[in-house]
Length: 180
Image 1 (cartoon, rainbow, N blue to C red):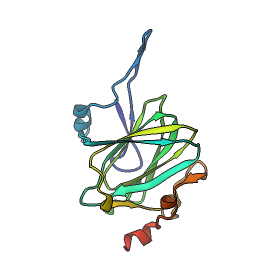
Image 2 (spheres, one colour):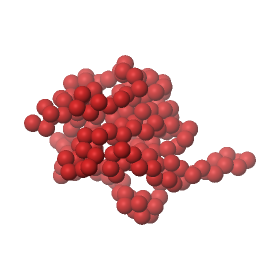
Image 3 (spheres, rainbow, N blue to C red):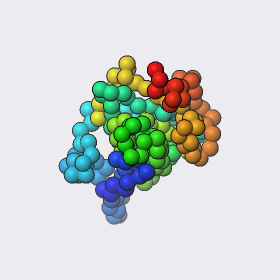
Image 4 (cartoon, helix red, strand yellow):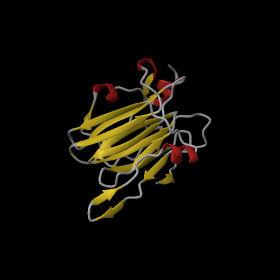
């Protein structure tokens, strides 16, 4: 595996080393010892999937607050998505910076998103499915989110979403969210 740093401190694009022969392909997509050696979280007690029917579906920007912030390791297992990490850690050198990775099921790549970062994605084609490994279990009262189009972040989405939940569309801007 290769860990490629992004503009967000501690967020990495994770590329697999696929080996092919006449039988097909094999690649290791996760190894706890390799992740630990990189200083990354090696244990994920919860896994989730997100299935999305239509191109242009946006989910985000979500995170889990202290005292149980979550690391996410996200992978497309069908289709392609524009996946975004947004640094909301006030003490981070990359505070309020975002980074994006195009996750592609055919490439089998992943995005490691550190705790304290919001996460969201936009589907680039119909019928996308994502697999999330989570370092914390979901705690509903700690669930938070910020607007996907907040000018404070200026995320350069590839195009405007055509499908977004009422909840995500109604999220507060970051300055409003912080004052709560």
